[in-house]
Image (cartoon, rainbow, N blue to C red; front, side):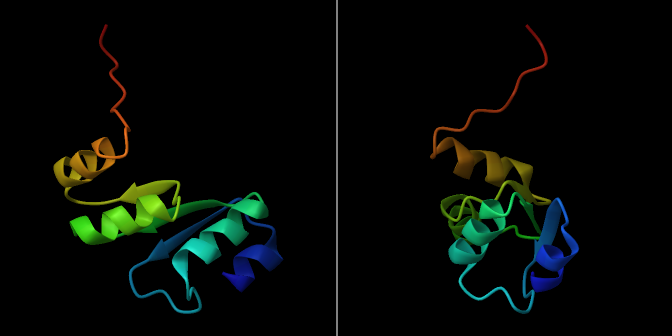
Length: 84
């Protein structure tokens, strides 16, 4: 995270077990404050997806899209439809 900030990057991709993150919500808030988009890679667990949404992660990358969409719907997020 520190290198991302020092490098002036536009985004960071955090993965499960990333070192130096600590409190995820606080880390995401600090990254957002600096204009950095936060991706999270690699969860297929409902509990973790809930935590990521509450922490305001911008993009959750998962192999279980149905689960992710179900969790997101509980937060009022609806999928985008390309068909009218």
